[in-house]
Image 1 (cartoon, rainbow, N blue to C red):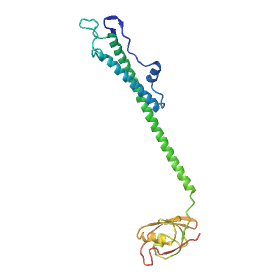
Image 2 (image 1 turned 180 degrees about the vertical axis):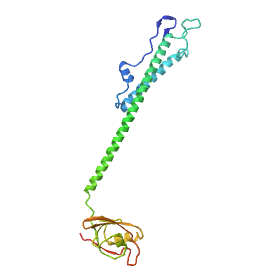
Image 3 (image 1 turned 90 degrees about the horizontal axis):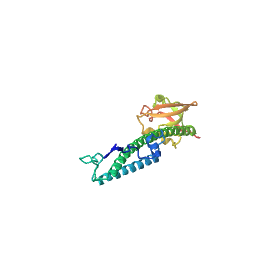
Image 4 (image 1 turned 135 degrees about the vertical axis):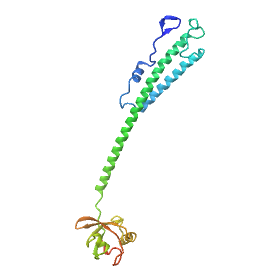
Length: 240
């Protein structure tokens, strides 16, 4: 730009106020996936410094009769104004333009760094989730492998023809592994089975038995019938 009152001399073209090192950091995009929280904090610190410098230069213009960025520096006759410090005004204007360019560059770098950081966090969350699911599956498999097979705790020693037990498919010598909610772990006496039967009249119960070495799962519905009780079979505890 031409200096007012001196057509032969030009103001320096607006350029970045950053050092070569800072310009290299702000001018190019950060390495993909390389942005860290500390990098972003440093960028924000530089952004605030630039904003403070811009404000200081605007205060210089304000101190010069409130002159801004575009007011003419010559009077109505074309002579340099004598009521302001032209050097200070030109320097402040030049600095503001350069600093605004720096500010845009830093803001772009902040945006790119935040994008990279968020993308990396999403990838980490996905990896952590996959690893947690894998670990949970492995843990479940390990627990299943470590559990000993359920053992029978009772045995069917008689069944009445036409009874609910007979209809369900129970057979004499079936060894009971599970009877509704009763299993090897919580079985204490035949009263446990009697309680389940009384509270399940008309409702299906899952009964798991071992028959000639094979496991069978049956559906038994305790029901009132022509005979005694709700099952029509006799169950005895197994002595281990």
